[in-house]
Structures are given as C-alpha cells and as structure tokens.
Length: 248
Length: 244
Image (cartoon, rainbow over all chains, first blue to last red; front, side, top):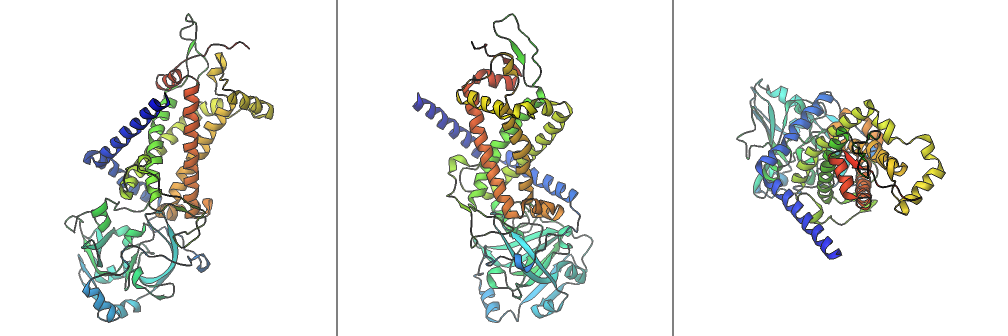
C-alpha cells in the first residue's frame, strides 16, 4: 500500500516536473513568462520617481571584503597590454548617436566632476556587498558628447570576453541620466582594481549586478538594441535569458 | 463560508454551500502560484544557498544558515537555471500578489475576513484553544453544523497565512529589488536590510511549505473527496453527527 502510494506520488511529481520542464522550453509559454518583465518595469517606474536614489550607506556599513565575480581578469592581449602600460594608452570612446564623439584618457576622465557614493551591489544570485564608488556621472559624458534626440539606449562595450564572446550591457535614458549612474574609476578610496573592472566600470544602482558592466572601453548611443550582438541588450540577456530590466 | 443553507435535506446528510466563488478562485490560483513560487524559489536559492542578517552578505561574510542545494525534483526548472527560475518566479509573483490583493479587498467588503477568518474573542480563551488542540490531536473533526465553520486552529492558521506570511513574503520579496528599495526605502528599514529581507523571505516560504503539509494532511484525514469538492463546486456534505 505504502509502496503503491509512494509510486503514485513519485510518478505524479515526475510527471509534474517533466511538464514544467517542457513548459520551460516551450517558446510560447516562455514568451508569456517574459511578458512579466515589461509589466514589472512599467509598474516599478510608475511608483518610482525617475530620480529616486538608491540608499547611500555610511562607511561603517561597508562590506569588509567586497567579493568580485564574472570576469576577474580579461584574457585578451589588448587588455594585458593596457594593464602593463597602467592604462596610459587606454581611451574611452563615446560614439553612436552623438554630435561630438569623444575619446577620453583615464586622466581626462578623472579630471571631470566626481561623484562618490557608498551603495549596495546586489547580485542576481542573491548576495549583496556594500562599497564606495568614485566616478563621473554618465549624464555629464552624454551631454558633453551631444546626445541625439533619436538615442533611446546607451550600450557599454567591454574589454572582457566570456566563452569567446565580448561582454556588453545596455540601459535606457531614464537610468543613463540618473544622478547615481556613474562610470567609476575608483573604489573604496583607491583606483579601481582589475577584478572589479579596471579601469572603468558602470554603476547603475537601481539594477542588479550584471548590468554594472566592467572594463568599459566604448559607450555607444543607439536607437534600438536589435542588431547588437544577440539583440537582447546584454551578454547575459543573450546567452542565459536573464532580464534586460534587472530592477528586481 | 456561508451560514448553512440546506440544499438536500431529504438525504441522510445535509449538503451546504460552503465556499463562495471568490474563495474558491483565490484558493486555486494561489495554490498554483505558491507551488511554482516555492519550486522556482528553491532554484533561485540554489544560486547562493547561504542566508545572512543585515544590509549586506556574501561569501566572505558569516552566514546564519548554509544549506546544500535543493535537489532537481523539487525545483523549477529541474536542472540549474537561475534565469529560467527567475522568469517563473517573477511572473507567478504577479498572479500571487494580484489574486491576494483582490481576495483581501473582496473578503473585507463581504465580511468573510471578519466573520470566518479572524477568531472571535471567546475562541482565543486558553480553555477553548486547549479543547481545540485536543480535538485535533485525537483527529476528532467537527461534525454536523459545527463543520460549516472553521474551528479556531483553522482560523488561526488561515489568518497567519493570509494576513501575515503572504504579505511578509511579498514585502520581503520587494525589499530584495534594488529599484523598489530606491522607490520605497522604508522596505529596507522594515526588514533592517536586504539580506535580512532575503532571510525573512526564506523563513516565511518554509513556514508556507509547512502549512501546506499540515493542510493537505488535514484534508486527507477529514474526507478528501468531500473537502476537495467543496473547494471546487462549493458544495459540502456535512459529516454525520457523532454520538457524544
């Protein structure tokens, strides 16, 4: 009797699970699940002031050790050369739908107005770390480059590769011009270290960690994300079906 | 739950309309959503199976709980897929949240909450609670007209799930969202940090899982066909009076 009950339970749960896995792989069902992303973004934007700030913490709240993840050391020859030259020949390009494309050295970027913020980094995996970031507001660079009114997204092209493909990320203009959205060249009162994305990484404080592109070398203003790599707006969005809107 | 309206008094046992449509709809929507949320939630937890108290918490920080990963038969999807699990979790969160809000509003307006869920003063007296506990321990389920009303432990457990655990799950879930924390900073204050909210989220989910085990056991022991039918069609056959 118990054996039979267990058998029924086991086969029942196996059926249920294989059903869930089949649904998980079904493109139409997947599209239904995906529609929640747009709903979440619109609902969150509805209740959130465009410029609502992520909480800024005191230095006493900072993580004793801020772990790194993703690429810890880009393995391309170009990056090795930049590292050996201490990024003296590194240039950040700002182009795409702008009237005055920029090419800035690290020295020039560090001379721009600085925003320092102690914020929490939330990884999609579930952990959080609090650190202090020093950088230039992205909005300043975009204004300096003369952003076109056609631009709707800002794409960050990175120097690291994962699985042979370049890392990249993108955000829309609401987040691009948010006061806490900075390109950080410093962390915890020091120059940004390699595992955290030296020489320059994005901080977009109202979204999850994978949006915070590291090793940024080019910022491109675009009208549409279609046609850029996999077309979904980011490395993890293309390769793992992670949400492009990572505010939750 | 309505007052008993006998439908077939000629039969030896009375059939009453037990659960109204709003309750039945909400029950099954929530049952589906809660199962999906629990199973996809375990997959999300597998991505970092450690829990912390406070604002931050990662691998180098002390965890108050560290578990092995949940096995594939318990998770959605069944093999490691954080992105997929998040798609399921965050889509069904809308189902769970929207149906709970609609049910709560409706039940507040039609008096279901006040009449059937919130225990009355006399029911919370120790003597009454003790009697209720003894009846449960002996598996003496209410009979006759008493079976139409929820007993006190039942009321207390439904109260805890509907008005404490589910709201806490939703709020602690929102407190894990960096955008919601910017919009509603009180979420962080309420739980005293994002990692505390993640811990509360996990504890409440575990309590919901425990509730489901007890709930299903009670359904099985008290006449599963009658109980399940009453939650589908609303019609409930009153159990025969027991010789006292």
